[in-house]
Image (cartoon, rainbow, N blue to C red; front, side, top):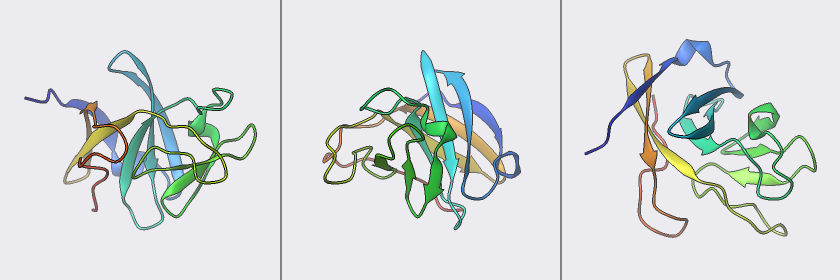
Length: 117
């Protein structure tokens, strides 16, 4: 059973933006796409541990602010030619409220990746 942690409201995160929270034992970046999908990743790029929450959101990914690695929201994997992966977390939207759940399965395993509003 997942213990959900209240993060805030969808309107607290600008479209194509992020919010960083300390939860579940690490820093977690909560992202909102231009289409209002919400995703959660560990806030640390697999390359040089850059803060993904400070990156540029485009489509269903974020470009790390340090070296422009693009991390895919749905898999947590760096897009080619880069290689690496970050931890993903479950997200649940209850109306406008965002809740963070536990870590999701590793990339390639079936798991909830994001939620549409």
